[in-house]
Image 1 (spheres, rainbow, N blue to C red):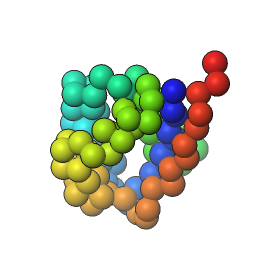
Image 2: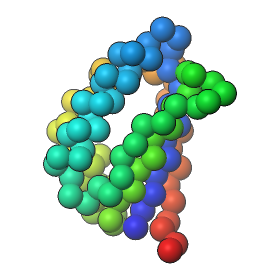
Image 3: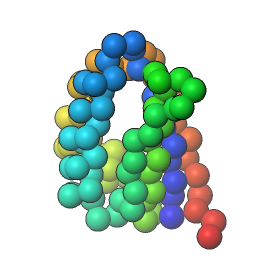
Image 4: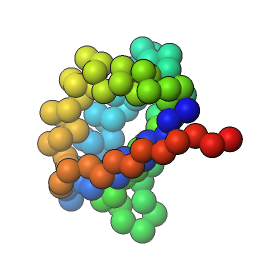
Length: 96
């Protein structure tokens, strides 16, 4: 199992558009990626401009399929318009 935590900082005033774009992406991930076990957007309680995406994949092939998927690539412009910088992505190995 592979875990991913992506930290995304957005521009002030873009939360509604960002969350809407992410809902569309999340629905596509859940519908089209059987190797994706979890894909959840969360927002910081202390900084409303900071989001974290919590992701779990069955294996490296599932993670690769996610990054190469048409729906992930299509979401890039909509999500990117809200971002205040590059995402910080941490990869984790499943332990138990």
